[in-house]
Picture 1 (cartoon, helix red, strand yellow):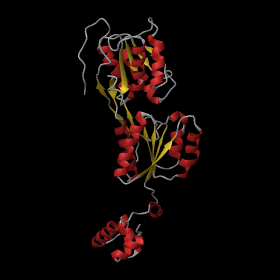
Picture 2: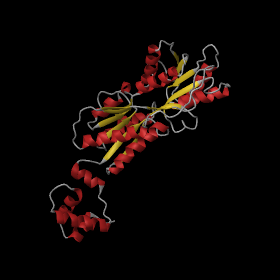
Picture 3: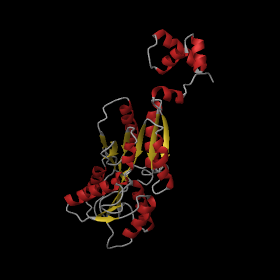
Picture 4: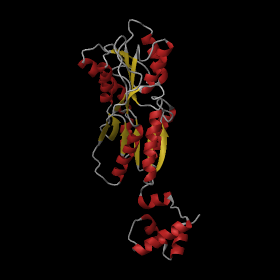
Length: 342
C-alpha cells in the first residue's frame, strides 16, 4: 500500500505539501492540489486515520451507545445513523450497553472515558439513570434518540400524540371498553412507555371513558402474557386494546387467537411503531420511522461538529395512522372499511 511519501515523490512535491493537499488544511495552489489528488488516486493511497487525528485533533469517529442490538427499533436506528456517517466519511464505534449488565458498567466507566470519538449518539438512555449526564460530562457533543433529556439535542417520536391518536381511532369506531396494554405503572418504566400511557389516559378522559391499564413487559412475550390474563376474564375483557408498541400488540393478537377470540370481530387491537411484522399480522398501527430518527440524529451531531450553533434542538416526529385488519367496530355493530390513512 502506498504511503504519503510515495504520493509526494510521484507528484514532485514535499511531504508537507502533499499532506496539505490531501487533508485540505493549509494553502496549496489549485494545480498542485489537483496533481497530488490525481497521483494519490492512481497509487491507491488511503490516508491514515491515526495520523489525521494527530494533525487535526479529530478522530472522524462517532460513538453510538444503545441498550439492545437485536431488536427491530434499535437495528433500524443504527442503519439510519450509519448511512449518514458513511456518506460523510465518518467511522462508527458501537457500544452495546444492555441494562443491568457488567458490560454496560464497563462501557460507561472505561471505554467511553477514553474519548476515542468526536461525538456520541445515545439511543434510548433514560435520564433517571444519570447516564446521559455522564456522557455530557465527557466533553464531546451528544445527541439523543428517544428520551427527554434537557442536556442534549433529542430526536424522538411524539409518543403522547401517537397514543392519543391510536385511542381516538378506537373511540371513533365506537369502542368504549378500551384497555391499554404494556408498561409497568403510571410512574415507573421508560419515558416512552409513560408518554404513551399518558396519551391513552388523555383520550379516554376526554371521551369520559373508564381507564383500564394492564401492566406488561414491553415485548411480544410480555404482551402475550398480559393479554392472556386480561382476555381470559370475561368481566374484565375489553372490546379493544391500545398496545404500548407493536410487539405488545402482536403478542395480544396471538393470545386472543389461542383463546378463541376473533380479531377484529370480538377484539380490536392497535399498536404503535409499524414494526416489520405489523403487515404480516394485519396490525393497525401508528407508524414511526426509526431509520429516519437515526439519520436525523447523525445529521444534528455532524452539524455541531461543523461548528454550528450548539443550542439544544428537539425534533418530534409525527406518526402516521395505518389502518389494517386488526381494528373494526365493536361486536354487534356494523363493520367499516379499512385502509391506509396518510
